[in-house]
Amino acid sequence: MSEADYSPQEIMTIAAARGLKNGTVCFVGIGLPSAAANLARLTHAPGVVLIYESGTIGAKPDVLPLSIGDSELAETADTVVSVPEIFRYWLQGGRVDVGFLGAAQIDKFANINTTVIGGSYAAPRVRLPGAGGAPEIATASKEVTIILKQSRRTFVEKLDFVTSSGYYESSQGNGRFRGRASTTVITDLGILTSVPGARELVLTSLHPGITVEQVREATGWDLRVAANLGATPRPTESELAVLRDLHARTAAAHGDSASSE
Amino acid sequence: MAELVSLREAITRLVPDGATVALEGFTHLIPFAAGHELIRQRRRSLSLIRMTPDLIYDQLIGMGCATRLVFSWGGNPGVGSLHRFRDAIQSGWPQPLEIEEHSHADMAARYQAGASGLPFAIMRGYVGSDLPKHNPKIKSMQCPFTGETLAITPAINPDVTIIHAQKADRKGNVLIYGIIGVQKEAALAAKSVIITVEEIVDALNAPPNACVLPAWVVTCVCEVPGGAHPSYAHGYYKRDNAFYKGWDAISRDRETFLNWMNKHVLSTADFADYRRSLEPGAKQGAYV
Image (cartoon, rainbow over all chains, first blue to last red; front, side):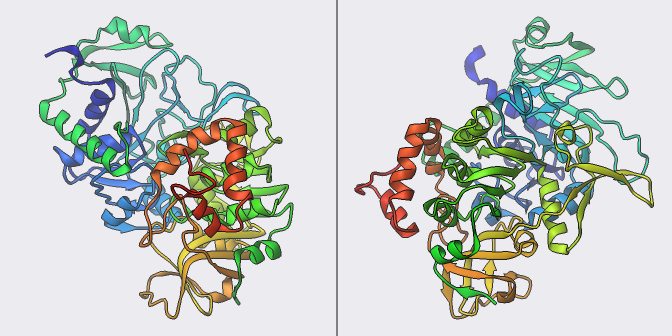
């Protein structure tokens, strides 16, 4: 098997999918998170529950949605509720196990930036889309999984803007609000995990063929590495086949020649 | 009580320059026809409110209709940036755009507060986020019962809320189904309400728990078939994903954008004419 028999996107998607179990309630964003959650549903976890912020609960799309509110989601959902309801009763109410997020920048505490890059908030060099549902998904979900490609540009010592807070330990002791139990960051090189108490991400798994040195090289801070560093299993033929089939169906449905990420 | 009028008349009557306007629809049922009519009528200095600005506000901002934007996520879903939105914030083109930025959960809560006649919304939000440092409207208070610190933000009460729905009956009762987003709250929070619909029918035949806005909370109903294109209307037509992807190239460059808007919006009489201008082989030329 050659190094090139899967893409960086594919191993990120597959590694994220493996973390989801039957019955896990996932609050899912568009792009890689949506691909990963649906891959889990189509492989080892048919009973995973997908919630999209458009209000679709238990969506089972046959193709990946381009937007967070495609009709495919509404047609296959167990129920469709309003946007105020999805955020109040379902997210803030503590019913989400895993919140799936993407980001433009991340720091060692898993704070993420999706707002501005460079310059100031008022006069940014690059204006990004902004918060969306992320600030509350990041703090109200029991666990958070963040998927993004690793480089010194994205894994930075200091964020230009903290849109959504990172590993958060609840100190409020009021029962309902648990803070988040754990954070997992899945990149194209490996997996970084929160360590309770340390409030800092630790490299806990390397993808096949990747070295610790490569991961350090792609990280803008002095990266901590777990003593018992794990190895991410190679994507299996069946995982790759199901994922590629999903992308092919999606591309055909959206009228593309290339598959969407 | 709702009046059945043309979209042109509704906009002329209810949306003056300088108005605070919310055009809602969460990916589904985005009121594009109404957005185009605001552009055709050359509205200026609007305060625009919308959770997801989407292409509809990219067009309004790029055409110089807005001086202020209240929002929570400004991207082209699944595609990338809203180039006109970015250009306005990064370079002040075609004019400076003041922004007021929130999260989705907050915007939804603010509309709920507005619909409920309350002065502010309360939520467990923005924990650890920098947004409250840059938006003075995001404040916090302590729960008088538990002592927990919660985020509070002022209610949204637009001068006008504009939404698109599937159907209305001849009295102006409106039925909306599928992904209903925040439209009911946005409508009930507003001083006046314009609703464009796919069709006007004799009877809605709505089941008991359906999302219906009664005629007496609606100001104007306008029949505009296809009025949500390129977004979609559940039960009528699908989202035009190719248009969303094609918009990236159209909107990236100022001149290309202005030419497109001139051809398809300013030079068309109404939304039906706009739809004809997009047909393959149309004299005005199709997108992409």
